[in-house]
Image 1 (tube, one colour):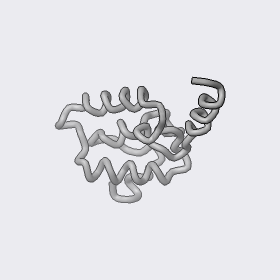
Image 2 (cartoon, one colour):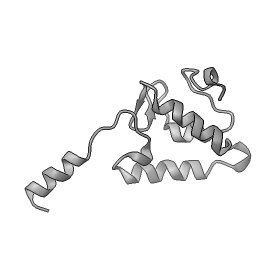
Image 3 (cartoon, helix red, strand yellow):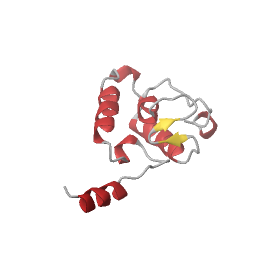
Length: 97
């Protein structure tokens, strides 16, 4: 890769404040988080609709940064997938999730 190609590729890779790990260019981080989510036992995993609703709330939150919650440091995709988890800012409970 020459200098111009590298510069163009770096311009495409941007910091995404309100992105989940699956939306970032860092596929290794997404793989790590995906493995953590997959390892949650079925009886401890939230229903897909609940997880999706929670992540929707997270994506609208000012405290989301590159898939991590700035309140507690967790990866939101992991926390949202756990049945008995709650948002540290109580944003999920305020929306009925």
